[in-house]
Each structure stands twice: as C-alpha cells, then as structure tokens.
Image (cartoon, rainbow, N blue to C red):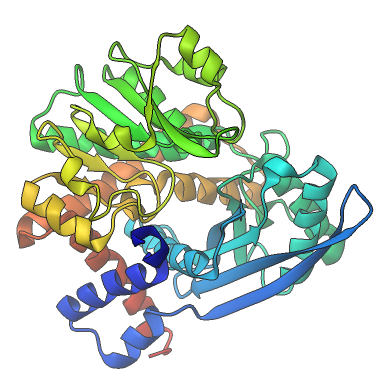
Length: 428
C-alpha cells in the first residue's frame, strides 16, 4: 500500500515548501517555483514489427529556466508517470543550481519497456518523441539527455531527427552521445564518480578512512557501476549490490563479503542493469531478497536506482554501522524516512547534490559541442571533481553553520539561487 500511495511530485513539493518557509519566500515566488512552468503531454504512434500500430504516451516537463536552458534526461519505463517526470524536472532545477551551472530543470519520458521492443521500434519512439517536442527544445532552450533505460544510441536517433527538422547540425542539442559523435569523454563515469567524490569529502569531514570502508548499493545500472568502481579504487569495498531480475520480474541483492569486483560486475551485467544469476553464482556471490541491501553491516549505503527506496517501512532496518547515506538516485528517501535518519545521526548527502555529476558532465558536453572543441578525459574528470567538491563544501559548510540537515542546506542554496534569478528577470 505504501508504494502505491507514493507520489514523487508531492514529495518534491513538500520538500520545497518546508525550505521556502525557512527562507521566508513571498507567495508569488513560492507559487512559481513549486510548479512546472510548462508541461507537454503527447502520443507517439509506432508501427510495430508485427504490422500493428501501437500508441505510446510521452512527456516533456520544463520546471524553471531562469538560470539558463532546461536540462534533463528522457526516461523509457513501463511504469513512468507524469508525477514522476514533474518531480524529476523540479529536482533538476535544484541540482543545476546547487553545483552552480547555468542551466534550469527539465525532464522527459515515454511509457514503454525497451527490453521488449526491437531496435527499430525504439528508434521510431525516439524520432516520434522529437517530432512532438521539437518546438520547445533546442541547444538554447532545453537540452535533453539519457536517463533510465535510454542510452547513447537513443540520443543519436533523437539528434538526427532534430537536425532534419531544424535544417542544420545541432550537436549541442542533446547530451549523452557516444564519443566521436559529439559525446564527452568521462560522461559514462560522471554520475557514479560524482557520487563518490562527495562520499570522499563527507568521510574526510566525519573522520572516516575510506580505505577499509564498506558499502551496499541499491541498483546495478550506470550510477551504481561507476560508484562501485571509484569507491574500490579509493580502497573501499562494496559487499552488496541490488538489481532487477528480468526473468523473475523481482529485485535481488547479491552479496560478497570479500567485495564485488568492478570487472566481474561489468562482465555479468546487461545494458539494463540486470546481473546474470549464473555468472553471479560462479563468482560465489550470495543471492538474497531485493531489500537485503539496506540491512547490511556497512559504512555507507548508496541508493542508486529509483525513488522511494528508503521509506517508513524499511528505514529502521538500517544497521548502526551505517554512518553515511549517499543518494545516487533521485528521490530515494521519503520525508518520513528523513526524520528517522536524522534521529539516527546518519550523515546524508542529498540526491540533487550527490548525483549532480551527470548533469555537470552533460553541461561540459554541451559546452564542448557548441565550441566544437573537446577535452581530454583527465581534464573532464578534474573539472568534475572540482565542481562536485565545491558544491559539497558549500552545502556542508551551511549545514554546520546553521546546524541544519544537509538536505535542507542544499535546498536553501539552490532555491535561493533560482529565486534570485527569477526576481532579477522580473518574473516575480
């Protein structure tokens, strides 16, 4: 029942309202920032491989673009909802603001399951999505990117369709493209590495040595993969990782007390973040129920997949050993769970700061495309580290000075920046 009742947009608004009250925002500014500025709902007709026509529902939400063009991914998911997309667009606004990049918040989605569609059918959805939104997106208006179950090939199909419609080359229109086709080096690693850059800084502040620290990760997609990669490079050990099983249609947690190696993970996983059970067994990984990741005796919990993963029903399963929660996913913790986390004294890195590495590197890709000059990978990751570290220090400094929760501090910085831009433009 709790999962059915969960509404991510209501959660996003509840989080905003609490901070707006603390900042003393006037009513006009509150009304502007708690709702999207534009919403587009549409249908995408696709002739399937069977010869029949199927209608898919798509969305593009633009929350606020006072600080720059909209920025946000496009999700393909069978359970996508407009409330999820609105929440994600809202969080994108705060995410861009907290790391101080000149972009606003947007998000898109299509209700579909690419795992059950051919490449041709997926291409038609991509091109159909662009045909519906072409008048409201573009390199200086709204720049899409990949998200859940979308990837570089999808972005190329979309870019190609947009260029056909606009009549010119527009590589800066969309990010997350393959390297060599306008993509940025380091983009694949960016979100996961960004998570661990903030974890590294938090551990310094908490006096915890990352060498010998342990972690459990919820999710096994791109963010989880590269969070595991950098965490282990720094000397930490990931002992559990949860993923969705395509065959059984339920989540599982795989545990290895000696640590899950990055190479073995990548050798056992498909492009949708599903681990092959046979390979996991051959590695000696123990198979546990899907929610077992949150019950592990580890130093760090990293929810890195979907929203509503730490809630009132499971937050009390978190072990005393956990000193830090790093939100690699968007909206993984409900407000009810937040209260318990604060009571437990667990340090939390809020989602729109913790996982801002992806949008930051997307911004780098956009800049590189627009000037037609591309940086080496080391330069990209160095700039990313600098941005993430500066963002973390600004938020943690405010949290310490005001003696407030990290999420509240991040919101206060972001909302204040967006409110000021909206005031300066004369919108409110």
